[in-house]
Each structure stands twice: as structure tokens, then as C-alpha cells.
Image (cartoon, each protein chain N blue to C red):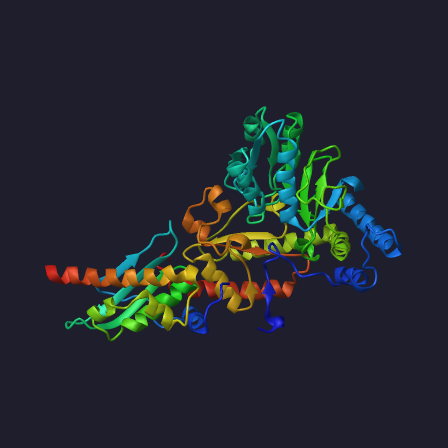
Length: 386
Length: 127
């Protein structure tokens, strides 16, 4: 299909790279390709670039430069936070707390620890909007609890948790707090001091940066066992020659994204799309509205139409959306997030996710809003449930 | 989306047999929203058991809608006995292919067909 006719609404899965980011990365492929661990000039140049990038990332979440470790992305950072904290603190206890609405890269490392490594887990319930109750969290913490992992901005329905309240509970109880902030990074304020976060996952490709690079914030003094043992890069926490061009791109993407006008633009677009789609009969918004929802996330239920069919039909018309999270769309079960919010399988299976980036255009929005009602009408006509 | 054949996409986008038949006893519905797809098949069957017309309504994925349409096309003009002999494999072959994860969709359509024929036969044997 002609690129001109496409409208991309799957930025919650990944985004296209910003030209300025690509430009910033260019010198590090063929010219300044040194290994930051090397003592020579090329090595030193790479190291300088990496330190500068580390500063940019640290500043964006109010952390110290030394508290940032670069990784290959969100999945690695989540694994490092969870398994790393679990191993380093096993003398203290083996109990963890998380929620039912986490990304699979949080749920599955925890499952692995529980299944074969003797750890236990408590899953916090969420309300119909996807919010965790900090009081429930406090009640779930025991003397054995070592780690709490709660997603900051939910990838499917955009619910933004109140990290400040959550952080007060975990700090008071002397338990580590990890948050997966891949979706919320640069889209809602993150301040690791104010929110009392000990471990934080962020990545680059959700903010119009390159894929394959991310970071973990590790609060000074927090014990973490590495996953990668090797040459001792990244203060022995993450061995492996750093992805220098990726890291430079990540920092540039952060710099570019971290402007209030982008959030404002996405929020306006989001609210316009919500308003317009809710005019379609028998449609409902999944998740919260306003400031407590990610500015780039829309998740809507359309009665009587299966999500994959709707998403597939839209794709034929050049409109890219997703059902649930992209990672699970090949499976047949209803979304674990929508189910945890109390929705029945029909509602969970009849919902689609529309996600924006700061580069989404008005033209794309108009195209999608024009196509969507027509496609829905066609599919509802042949539905036995409508 | 999952990779589908052109035939599957064509059937999904522009099904020729979508709809319903009023005043027929040959209606079969299978599936429920708890486990995913719901399919409803309507048949018009004449006195010598030939299927004159077949229509469907489906809540489900691309494969489910395309399979329903293909099944309706395959049974029109056949006797109910012949229609009951259509296999899952045959439907998949007629669609070019279906991803393995979606094979059950064509099976569900056949179950709806069988149910419609059985309902018709039951009504007629008691009359």
C-alpha cells in the first residue's frame, strides 16, 4: 500500500524514528564507532558521547548520572530489575508484589522466579479504571516482601498510577519499588526522588528513538545482581559493549520528546478521537479520562465486533491499530488487562487500542475517523451479537 | 494482522453470503463470547433436501468470517447429506490456507452448519 495513505495508530507498540534522532546517530556508525572501554581517542570519544547521553536521561527523571545503566530495552530492564533485585535480596525475603495489569516482561520473570526459584508473589487487584489501591498494597506487604513492581502508565488502557502515593508506602515499609515506565516516559512527569522510586525501566523506541536500547534507573545503594556477567561494563551491572549509536539516539529522542507542547498536542488529539468515536452507537471507552490517562492512549469497546476483525479491516484501509497489547494479539485469550478491570470476554475481545506519538498528524487522525465508522458498520451488519 | 491468503481477505472484506434468512427452521448457532467466536448459519432447504440458499452471521476474527462465507458458498446446491460431508480440511483448502492457530475457526463454521441441518431435520420429523 502507498505510504501516503497509511495512518499509523500503533505507537504504543513502537514508533517511527524522528529524523533529528537518526541524524544524531549517524556519526557513531562509521566515524565515531569506538568502544567506550577503549583507552584510545575513538574510545574516549564514544565514552564522552555516552556520558552526555547518560546525563540527559538522568536529568529527565531527576536522577543522578551514576544511577543510569543502559540496556537493550524495556524487557531487559524489567528482567534486570526483578530478577536482579530478587537474587540480591533473597536473604531478606522471597516475597514480591505486583499487579494483574503488568506487561509480560514483568509478569513472566516473576512467574519464573515463583515456579523454579522458591519465590512467592501477591497480585494486587485493580479497579474498573485500572488503578491500584495504595492501601491494598500496604496490607499486602509482609516481613518477607523484598520488591513491589507496578507499571506506571499501562500499555493497554493508559491508566497512570499515583506513583507518589505508592512510593510513600514502599519507602515507609522499606521495600524496593520498581516501575515499568516505558509507556509513560516523557508523556507524564517522572521524578524518582519525589515518587520515591528505587528501580525504573525506560526505553527508546516508544519515544521515536531507535529500537534495541533502553535504560534502568537504579537508586544509589540498591543491591542488584547482574544478568550479564562479562567485561564489567556499566559498573559491572550490565556487561557487553554498549550500543553507542543507540544510546546517542535514545538521548536525542528524550531531548526531543521532553517538551510540554508534545504532551499537549497528543492529549488534544486523544480527546478528539475519544469524543468522535464515542459518537458511534454502542461504543465505550476502556480506562480513565483526563490527566490520569496517558496522553497518547485510546482503548475503545465497540459492541458486537471482534477486535482482530476490526483491526484487520482497518489495516486493509491503511489504518494501523492493535488489539490488546501487540505482544499477545497472536494468542486467543482475552486481554489480561481488560479482564483484570472486570470486563467480560465479549467486551475484552471487542476492544481496540489506538495509540499516538508526537509525530502523529492531523491528516492521519482525519483518515482514521473517516474510515472507522464505515468499517464498523460493515462488520456489525454481519454480527450475530449486534 | 496475521498473514492470510488473498482469497481469505476477499471473503472477509466482501462476503457474498452474509445476512440471514427469515422464516426458516434451519438455523444453527455455535460458540459463545466466553471462548471467542459466535457463528450463526441460516439455510433454505427444499423438499428433496437440497440447500437452496445459505447465509451467515459471525462474530469473530478474519478467518472466522471468511470460513463462514466459504462454507455457505460450498453448501449451496448440495443436498444436506453432501453438505455434512464437507471437512475442515476442504474449507481450509478452498481458502488457499489458514494459519494453524486459526484452523478451529473453519471447524466452528462446520459445527454451525451441522446444527442448522439437525435443527431442520428435527423440526420436520416431528411435523
